[in-house]
Image (tube, rainbow, N blue to C red; front, side, top):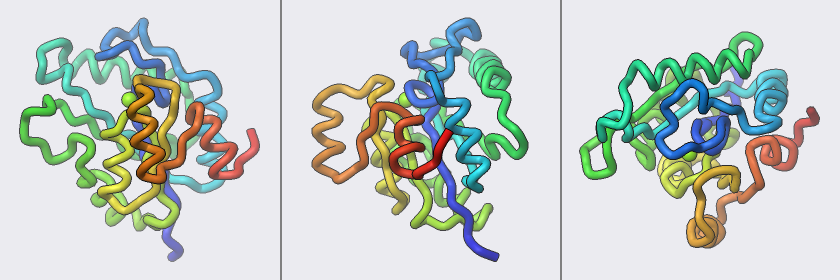
Length: 182
Ligand SMILES: [Mg+2]
């Protein structure tokens, strides 16, 4: 069986607007064009995963229950056709805590590559922060930096120095780098 292409998607600032520790259901607003872009990716055979750092949980800013409610709202608004997003992994640890999955850890990406027989050469990690891009780099897949979230000018200077792809937002990436029309 041929290995499948896949996208590892950051949530806040990539699929939905970043409100800095987004934790209220009413804050959930998809990035314009994200739904159509995701549908085009599914149509083209990309397996979709979400990998999100949610240190607000261990910082005591919000609960797992609030986090899950936000995901449900996001999925409801995106209303993707089957199979949609295959798995969502959240790392609740703060940056100073040990963590298996917190980005830039490549662990989740490696596990999904093995579990779903993915082709690393056709896998991307897309997000708005250095931790996203470095997770892709550490996993040995491609990284795309999007300007739709919390990235600062110095972060994009780093992205450029690392040779990461830089795009305005996720839909822009899908059009320009995956070559999909939607
Ligand atoms: Mg983000």
